[in-house]
Length: 319
View 1: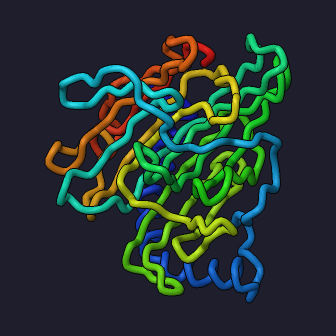
View 2 (view 1 turned 180 degrees about the horizontal axis):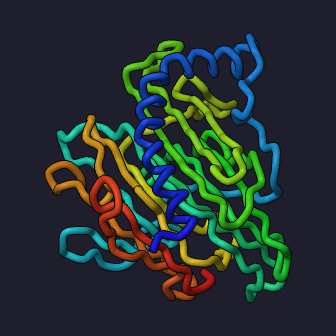
View 3 (view 1 turned 60 degrees about the vertical axis):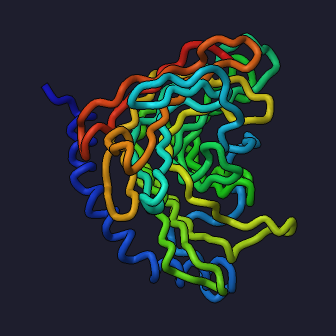
């Protein structure tokens, strides 16, 4: 029997492909509008779009790149990697297969429990989709977070976006546990702005609350340290992680990524559905760097939409 949540998710997935296509075809117009409004001061940012300031939230998240790989890699269809901060799936295009153009997924924000052993420590767990980040020094991403300011605090949930290392995570809206969110990161290499080619669109919608983040950026946007937005487009991911910066991994209910899918040079498939000729698939288990225990584990992919694209991340231990 299909429950109310499943009905809402299935209905939304029917719309998601159309919305994805609309975003891809409209990205030129969006880029022009956002560049003019956000960077040249020609107009105000459209209602509901994210600004480039941290407008909500107190956590200071660290880099969202994969910090390290530890332990052996299994010799089977998927590479099984132990990571100190990531849990989920990541794909890397094969040589000559082309570039990543999109990653998308839907999930319900997991419920957090702020009771944790580090009495005076903050806890932070992030759930996101992104391009780059797997064994690269950059990542373009958007997602949700569950934050505990201290042991026993009331959890706070956020919607955020980030071009790492150009900026830290930008916490734009608060949210609620159980909210259904839909996320996209799109990349169009053919659009050029100020002599820099390649435009990213970060799009996150909280279907439950109606709040939406929409940010467009690229290599023409640089900070005072001459670090610019964008990267090598060498991977795509659906990930649950503990952010760097001394945070404990927030204890959460299991997180299921629905319809986690990737587009590589025009081929759109579930993240676990690409042949080895097109992309290598990496399954990441988070291992506590101090304890050595499994902090988060990942299920296998199961067919739901667009091939093998649904999987669950389960919390086991504080890092």
